[in-house]
Image 1 (cartoon, one colour):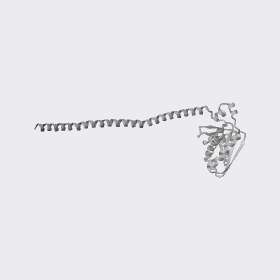
Image 2 (tube, rainbow, N blue to C red):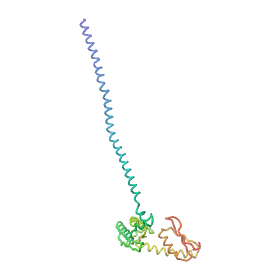
Image 3 (cartoon, one colour):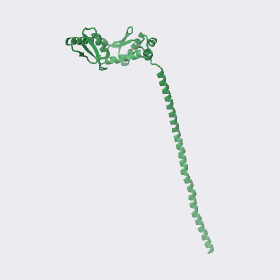
Image 4 (cartoon, rainbow, N blue to C red):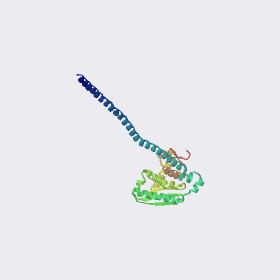
Amino acid sequence: EKGGEKGGQGRQGAATSNDRQPAAQKKAGGAPNEKAPRQRAAAGAADTTKDEAPGQRRRAQGARGRQGQGSAADAAADAVASTPPAADAAGSTGSATRKEHHVDAHQVGAEAQKFMVGLLDAFGLEGNVTLVEDGDDLEVRVDGKELGLLVGPRGATLQAVQDLARVASQRRLGDHDTRLRVDIGGYRERRRAALGSFAQKMAEEVKESGVARVLEPMSSADRKIIHDTLSGIEGIATRSEGDDPYRRVIITPAND
């Protein structure tokens, strides 16, 4: 019986020992599992650091790039500011500077003529472009068929073409001495004749009625034709009023 009791106690001790062992194993096995999340968290932090590092480097490089671009832009602005434009160098600083940068009138006319030839090619139009020179007065004449596209209603497109020709010649060369006109298909001559006849008719009506006549808004070129036509007529005076593009000529009796 004693042996049985001892055996039972031994089995009980073994059982107790076995009961503890799984707990110990669980406890021992739980430690790595508790460390594993921390290790994974640490690894995740390291991965995040790796992921952030290139972004931070890119942001730093971008900041340095923007600083470099700003410096380059500032330097370019300073360079532009320190370089006087051709127009200023050619005439806005005084007569002495104008003489130093005088541009030959023929060169200005040749550039305008070249521009008009290129414009015709760009529009697929055919025409003959000639340059008429009278000292500093230059006129580029374009003759041909189907040139109405470059004239436009009441010469509006022609005026724009003339402005472009002036930019391509006078402004590009820094010229302030020449007077450049562009005529296409003889439009300006026909317009001059028509406006001259109209102005004389209006002047006669003003003389007879003694009442001023206000004409429709006109371009500066057309207003000049009216003023020039009526400047020699006795008893008639002209003046312009308003702001472009609504500026117009008023024909009045000379005593008004």
